[in-house]
Length: 255
Image (tube, rainbow, N blue to C red; front, side, top):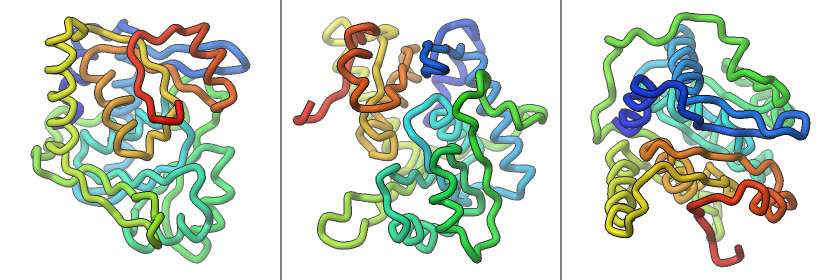
């Protein structure tokens, strides 16, 4: 299972720092234990809502710790993550809804009105995330997922990721747990050969809805015990980089 290394490390060292976000202008961190607890509570809530292995969960949210919590929860219970870009227009969100037919939608408060417009006429549960909440999914007060709950197989579908759509409407790429896990393991091998396979500090600014950032900017840090700082806005990238001094960075040509 894709998130097994993270969940195992959270059990061994729950106090290790993991995810960071800016709350009221100050950086606020969550430990591996807090992230794992929130993820397993969310997974249990999804099961309670009738979400089963293979069902879709649509996510519309900026890069922030809750994004990672949703990804971990969905992976653990065997559902399928459908991440939408924050830049998606209403018709593109409706297209994703039509093509993937999610059972539950999860969105940040700042984006939920767009999601509600797209959900008009659809019967679907929707959970909102308060961007100023100092805890992770505090609205979910439920026991964590039963450890005996079946884990997904490596070849089970994990995510449906929309391509850029530059040649028409977005294509929906199907990625299994093994698809992302094999990439993470390959990067770990390269880091090991370079003497860099150790907990690193990342600054996440590329969209997590993209397969590249999802793998290299989220799943990789989770697997190697790293920390991820969520850059809320691109105009904050330069000052955040100077203050946080990330030790390992993902990038694209423009950056």
